[in-house]
Amino acid sequence: MSLLAPLRELDSTQRHTVLASFLGWTLDAFDYFLLTFVIVTVAKEFEVATTQVIYALFLTLAARPLGALLFGRLADRFGRRPILMLDVVLFSVFELATAFATSLTMLLVLRFLFGVAMGGEWGIGASLAMESIPAKSRGAVSGLLQSGYPCGFFLAALANWLLVDHIGWRGLFVVGAIPALLVLYIRRKVPESTVWQAGQGTGRRPGLLESMKGHWKLAIYLMLLMMAFNMFTHGSQDMYHPFEEVNLHLNTSSGAAFMLVALLNLGALVGGLFFGGLSERIGRRKAMIIAALLAIPVIPLWTYGGSLLLLGLGAFLIQVMVQGAWGVVQTHLNALSPGPMRATLPGFAYQMGNLLAAVTATAQ
Image 1: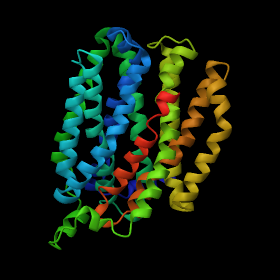
Image 2: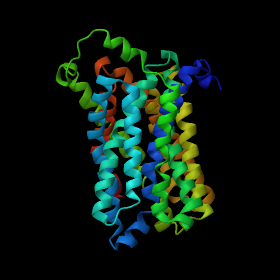
Image 3: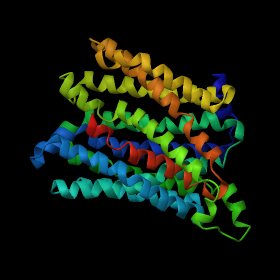
């Protein structure tokens, strides 16, 4: 529990800011993962191969760098809070529109647009949170924020398990519009970043190229790092439900299938919080390296467990390590980024990594 002690030291306003950023990433991931649970169903309705529907995942990931650059620059110019609210509304609208797709082409276009909106949330939410809390709390908070992603995955699995038989795949995407309500909470409880406000006092606003002067090597390093990390996480998460359905022959809405996904995401939550807090003691890079290396011996158990019990243990442990490494990323990227680019560079590097790793699901 001492690893999470910094979280208890936040004041009320800081907690609201962290919660809003956490919920933003959770609900963003919730909307993204809904499609992964209905790939086979959508393919049957549109009478296409599942690989053609899986291409929608590639388009979403490929669009995210565009959103990170667009919304990141807007957030650096106009503030974290209003652009975060705009971003949440947009990805919720495109999620809702997906429910009314009349063809595969329309679905693919809408998932691309969803990806643009999804691309902006991570960097803005992270910068808003990291700029609003004490330095000593950033490791633990980074782990908490990154845990929003598996929490969104879990909520998508829960919604699929409870609702898909009653409302169909289109109904799931209607439910996916709920995150728009988060804007009301942000508007009421979350103030603007004081760091951003202080920066406005200088009057002069440097452009993109000027802000990045002397930082291009850093940007390339961060993109390659995020490519590896995104192959790590998307490779172990995105196709897990089709893996259950095709390889394990589990009913998509069965309790066993849901339980495996629940264990997968419980492990991710534990890993993000543990290694995020641990990074305050041993350093960011060392925490990431340890978590990543420990994932290697778990791979056979995760894929070839031989029984539901062992597969569940493997799913839990692999995500402890995957999200353990990821739990440090938000604070690590924010700490390395220059102030005028803090809403843009972390998110853009992360989403460019997504683009470079976007073929992962298709390759699998």
